[in-house]
Length: 483
Ligand SMILES: [Mn+2]
View (spheres, rainbow, N blue to C red):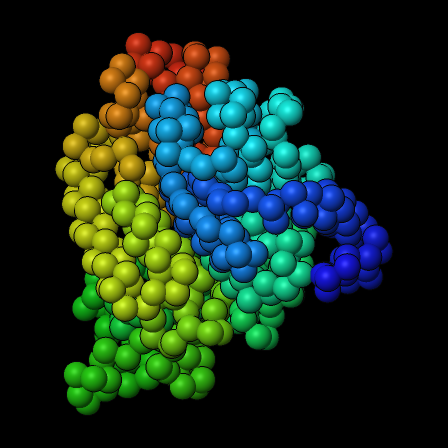
């Protein structure tokens, strides 16, 4: 057999569970390999976030390597209208990535007339259909899809099994995992396997400052945006951040020196600043856990140029999310597929635009304030778009603009008239105390809505007239979780 991906049922480097899951996945994909190779054309449908866009990129490359033409379509969610659109535009074969597992039943119209693969890590429904050729879902194979593999990771393994190589795509898969916040406490499960496969050649892991912008922001700017851990006296003030940096490594004597990014610093300069930050946090009375969050495993794409967004997995995923939020997924996909000129330039513009919108959103939040309930604080707004309000409240709680001791819930307008969008954000500190916002948002089902997400960041959609009842349910649930 022409594949070099040997997954033994036992590999001492990984748990038996991980080996068994991969072994089974591989067997299931290989059984279909010849059928899939005979596809004349394929439509990839994926999700509009960093994990979804990298998943689509991995599938594009995979089918290209198999000599099969690909069309791509990226959607925010798979609702009725989207399903109709997909049916109209799609080819005989469709691959869904990073979505679809929960909607097999809703997709009946598509499945009735298209041969379909679903590759997803969200909680699946168990529906089957004769045209559902492959349902490669993490949970079905006994893998924790919220933590141990993302859509991009599953797309990566599919690619490995189908092409026999494709290890180069592990770097993109890591960008997807970072985008879905699966890497913050180190890599586990299939995420670890896929990292190991590309480690040293395509992707690297460095223990480094956990802050955003090490490749592209001047050091003082990076620190002035620090949110987790929050740097009291530094976060929020470029002037104080600059003075702090100067007190650690001296003032640069020209403008060029001031513009140096973290990656431009020498190892000793980095150590000076890191030590300074640790003392700063300790002097503020932070506990060891908070101080530890200053340093994290960070992921580097070794094939990318330094000082660019695509070099750092966190910056890369943020860039893709910015494209997604402007509904300019094609630009994001072009960057994923290797365009480092026009598309990267455009993506940077979206990121800048995105930052401006966030700054404006934060100002609105500061002006309007929040309403406190017993265990949550609620921010109602019609001015901020529902696509970015989650990020705004996430920044607000991280930067202590609002109370950090209880999660924040935002209510904004949904595209669907009659509905509102509910976004929820906490902090890692609250998650350690038991907060599970995804569970709280899923309770929207009790009032006929739908919701889910991650423990620290989740969302829901409910009918307007059910909103107050739902907020009451969330307030009570969060109270129980953090008792
Ligand atoms: Mn995902």
